[in-house]
Amino acid sequence: MEQLSESNRRDSADATSSSSPTVADGGGDGGEALARGLSAMLESVIRDFDSKTLGTLNSQDQLSGSLDRLVQELDQLLENAPLPFIVQHASRISSVRQRVSSLNLVLKSIQRRIDNIDQMLSANTTQEKTGLETT
Picture 1 (cartoon, helix red, strand yellow):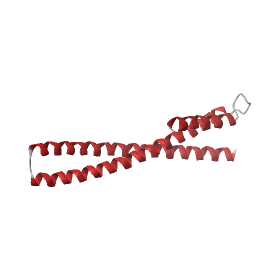
Picture 2 (tube, one colour; picture 1 turned 60 degrees about the vertical axis):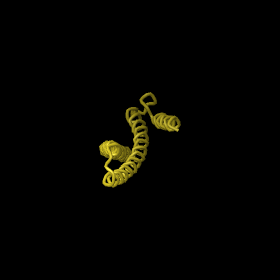
Picture 3 (tube, rainbow, N blue to C red; picture 1 turned 90 degrees about the vertical axis):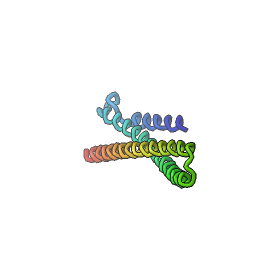
Picture 4 (cartoon, rainbow, N blue to C red; picture 1 turned 135 degrees about the vertical axis):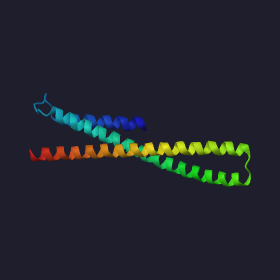
C-alpha cells in the first residue's frame, strides 16, 4: 500500500509538472510549475503523515488508558497483598506508563507541527492561485 501511494504521489507530481508550461516550451514560468508540482507532492505526503500520526495518537491514547486502568488495579492488589514480586512489576508498569505519556506528548507536538506546515502550504497554494488568476 505504501508503494502504491508513493507511486501515486510521483505520478500526480509528474502530471502536474508535465502539464504546466516550462521555459523550454516558451512559457517562462518553469519555476512556478516546479513549485506547484513540489507543493502538490508535499501536500499529499503531509496528509499521509497526518493521517498516520492521528492513528498513532489514537492508539497511544488507548494504550495510555489501558495502562492507567492496569495501574489502578495493581494499586488495589498492592493494598491487599504487598508481595515484593508484585511491587516490582507494579513499578515496571508505572515506568512504562510514564514513558508512554512522554511519547504521547511528543507525538502531539509533532501533530501540531504537521498541522502548521499543512496550513502554510494551503495558504501558499491559495495565494499562488489568486496571483495567477489576477494576472
